[in-house]
Length: 108
Image (cartoon, rainbow, N blue to C red; front, side, top):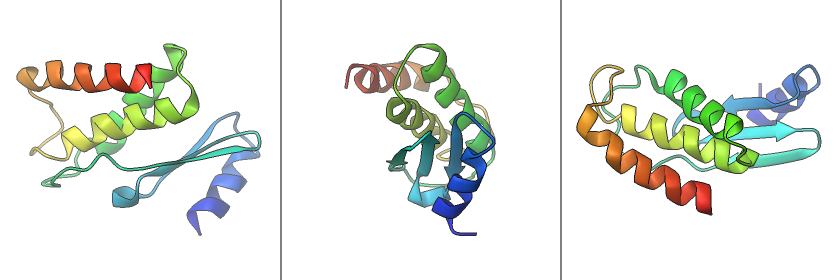
């Protein structure tokens, strides 16, 4: 189905609906509010873990009180980092950079 149509259908049963569209980003909907989230620009090597890391970033933002657009951007940030490596584990030395970028998103 068309991503926006799928989002609309899912949002009927869920308080918050998210549809990921790969390299085109994602869509988030709550009630009548719909956000298009741009992807984090990166070189894709392996998509393993991208969905899980997107969910982790989104939920991190949600429990931290961020708005839905920021939550989607945090999800995109983490997914964008994990696709740059083989496997699903982001190396420890990358996390300080991710935290800096996440803080910029939080403050935006």
